[in-house]
Length: 486
Image 1 (cartoon, one colour):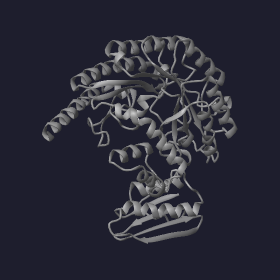
Image 2 (cartoon, helix red, strand yellow):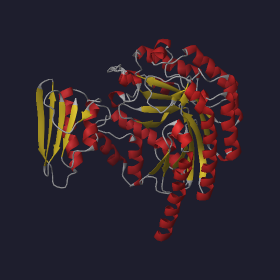
Image 3 (cartoon, helix red, strand yellow):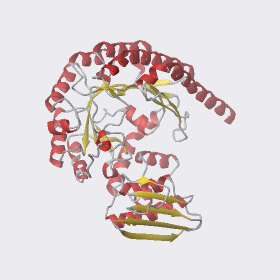
Image 4 (cartoon, helix red, strand yellow):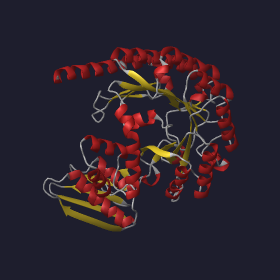
C-alpha cells in the first residue's frame, strides 16, 4: 500500500490516518501506475479521498463547512472510507497521537468540562467508550502527581546503550557486548557518562533545578560488568543528593546479565526501584526473539532481587511476540502476577523499521493481540491499577502500552516523562534532553540531543558538553520572559 497526499490539509495527520489501517504503507510523491494506494486531496473548499485495493476503486468527496479545520475534515473523510472498506473499527478511532491521557490533562487545564472531554474522545476521535474510560481513569490517578509537581522540578536519565544480545523486535541504539569492538567501548563510555553526569549536576544547580527522580535505562544497564556498574552508581551517589529524590530506578532488565552481585550493588548505592523484564515466560518465544535465557532464569533473577532487598520491582511483558498465542500470553501474565511484583508493564509489540523483525520480513498480522490485552483484567483482579499509558507508531492494531502498579507503587518518572510534566536532563549516547518551560507544562518543548552512537559520543564528548550549555540558556530566557511579564 502507498500513500499520496495533495493540498494544504493533507499532511502528517492524513498520512498517519492511512497507516492506522495500513501500517506498512509508504508515502510516495506520485500516484502509482499499478498496485494499491490511498489518495487524500485537500482543495480550498472540498476534500477527496480514494482507495485502490486489489484492483477496485473506492472514493468519497465532501464539501467542507466554512471555518472547518481542513486537516481534520480530510482525515475524517479518509478514516470513514478506510473503516468501511476494511471492516475494521480501531479502538482508538482516528487518534494518531501517542499521549491520549495528556489530551485529558490539557483539556482540563483549559477549563473543559467532563462532558466536553468525553465528546472529544467519543465523537471527535471516534474512540471506543472502553478506551476513553481507560484514559480518563489514568488521568484521574495521575492528577495529584501533576498537581504536586513544582515549576523547577526535573528528572535525570542516564542511558546505557549496550545489551548482551539484540532482541528481534528492538530498534534502540544499542550494541551487543559480546563482540570485541563493543567491549572496548564500554569502559571509556562509562568514564564519559560519569563526566557528563557531573556536568549535569552543576548545570541543574546553576539553573535552580530540583532533581526529583533518577532513571538508569538502556539498552541494558546490567550488561556493564559489576565493577563498571559500581563505578557508575558510586559516582551518582557521590554527585547527587539521593536523599532528596522521590524515586531512583535502575533497569536490571535481563536475567542473562543480572546476577546477585549486580543486584547488591544497585541496592547498596541507593536505587529504590528496578525492572526485571521477562517479556514472556515461554522458552520458545524467548528463543524466537533472540533471548539467551529461560523462563526459570527470570524466576531465579526475581528471587535474587528480593533476597538483595529490592522492594519495588517492575516486570515488562509484550503482547504479540512472534510465536506467542493468547493462551501463551495469559500464562506469562499469570506467571508475572504469581511473582507479585509491584509493577507490571504490558507493551503491545511495535514493528520498528530498524528491528530485525521488520528488516528480515518476519512480521505477521498478529490478529490475537487485542485478545491478549483483554486478559489484563487479571491485573485488576490481582490489585493492580493502570497508571500510565502511551502509544507508538507501528504498534500492532494501533493499540497501547500500559503501566500497571499496586497503589502507591506508581513509577513517577514514567508519569513525568510521558505527560511532559517537567524537564528531563538526559546523559549518554542517544540521549534527548527535554526542556519544559517552568509553570507551563503544556507549552512547546525544546530538545537537546546527544550523539546517537557510543563511539561518536566518546570521540565528540566536548561537543556533548557544549550542547548542554543550551540548558542554562533556556532557563535564562525563561527568567527574562517572566520578569518582562511581571
